[in-house]
Length: 86
Figure 1: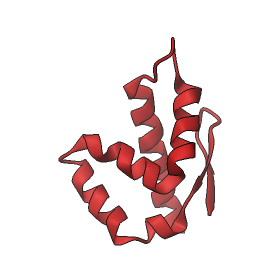
Figure 2 (figure 1 turned 30 degrees about the horizontal axis):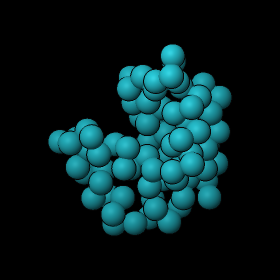
Figure 3 (figure 1 turned 30 degrees about the vertical axis):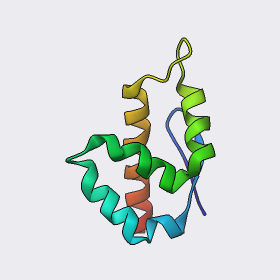
Figure 4 (figure 1 turned 60 degrees about the vertical axis):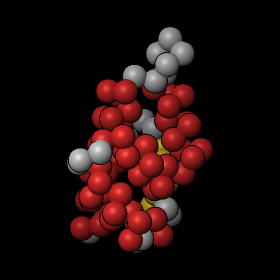
C-alpha cells in the first residue's frame, strides 16, 4: 500500500495492485471522455471505505459537493503519478 495525504489533511492508502492493473489504465483512458468514470477509478485505488471517508470529510449540509470531490480526485491522481515516477 502507498500512503498519501491531501492538502485538506485527508489520509489515504492506494492499492498498488490496482495501479499496476490493466483495468486501471483502461479506466483512466475513459475518464477524459466519460468523467462519470472518476468514482470507479477512485474506488479502485483507495477502496470503497476510503471513498466513503473522503465523502464524509467533504460534506456540507449533508451533501458532498462535486467540485470538492473532483479536486480531491485530481490531487490523488497527481500524487499517484508523482509516486510512480519516483
